[in-house]
Image (tube, rainbow, N blue to C red):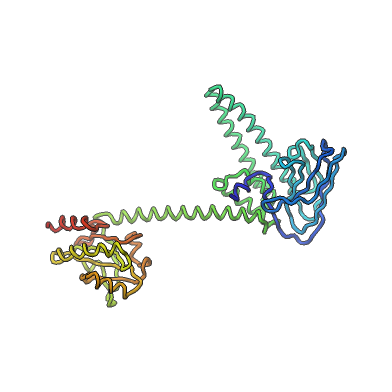
Length: 391
């Protein structure tokens, strides 16, 4: 929402505040032709609104003068109507002179006495030139579309693209020309925050010298942070997807099961590879895991059926509470000897090696330590063991 407000050329949504060394009176004066009898307003930008500071009714001469006392460099504007105005960046002590035509303030004004406002004027002229070219081509493009002149409309479509590309080159040159000018805020309405990330950074950096603590600069910094955070999320997702891909490949049937050593309830270290020569169901579970406990009777039945034929189970518990872990083993009658746990829950060290993000999770390992299949439960486990042992 805030970016929609920010991305609007010279629209009154900013209050740019920075400390200068001392307060000083600044003055804006000049001459507005064709404005006799009309009221000229002097306003200051304040966050998302305008503060009206003063106004004057123009006489036939069109002369005006406004004063402002401030300790800060800030953004102001003069206007006759809300949609046509001139924006100023006033530093304490500036004496600014302006000439303009009341019929089109923004397109006719000239300015002296304010370096930053002259920068704004330069970019405004650049934008107005581009808009004029764009609108001329666009009108011809629409007529060609209406007349179904495909070749001409295609040509004009390319011209529109070329006009925009030419503008972006000029835009970027402006950014590089005035790297410390707060006038760069005007460029904000002509960048795509995500696509033109480097330009956004330049705009934020330009505020550092004269407006380091401004509300405007804070908004741009927040927008940059939002992009940085989103990029970090996307990068993390990409890394995780790549990790899962590698894990999936590493857990393919025929791959060696990642080896590990973990202590049982008596503190005795048990190593997975010590069970070579048997088929091993590596079972990740926990006393607090309902689906795991529900699956235990099936594991018990298969263990009882094949334990004398070279089949065993190694249970890795993701419990935190030692008593609850041991009570669950006893209550569920998990009679095989290989029960291990670090009592660290999801911080259990072996989980990343197997890419485990949920339990129950099982890995069936053959006599040579190679993976037969992963995540076998219920009838699927029973069928696979029948296939292996022949009954």
